[in-house]
Length: 214
Image 1 (spheres, rainbow, N blue to C red):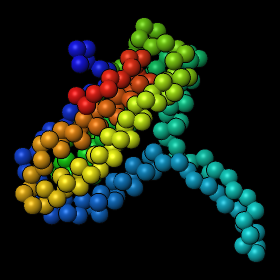
Image 2: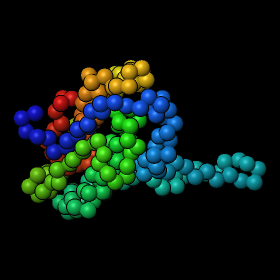
Image 3: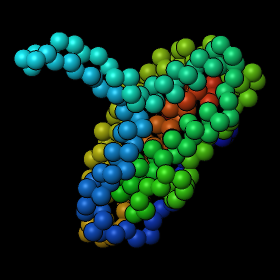
Image 4: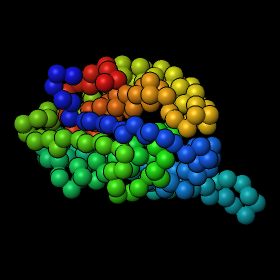
């Protein structure tokens, strides 16, 4: 890219990976995945039953849904007030960084257990926008729609990525090393996904994401 996109992702390539922790990676990751699910999942339903056990009412409990709330609140602040408070941006960035660290660990790209604070081997940065100068106040209403072509491509890239991740997992079990081409591909998919998220949902830029893994 000639101009640096306002959402950047790099992951340090590991020289050697632990075969044992790689073998049990999904089991070891359960606690941190549960934490991430609490932060980003929806609240589900509250089901009310009568004395005979018959369901009489279903309603959302209103808990969770941080990602949806984050998007809606950010869009409202930009559209109504043309503001993106720094503390709000910092929260969105740190949540995105934590999510990326969990993803890197799950896909076996690092042996380091995901930290809730330290960057570790995952370098993810978003550029804080000057809203009146950098952002159109009305675009948040349609960005999610404009990004549809990217959703289609990402579905294909992620499907290929899952197969590639299995191959990478087997390679680590055999050799202790992650194949560099597969590593670069998976990081590229993560980078692509981050740019789409930054544009359509985190709303930190009006620059349309490039169709590129680099």
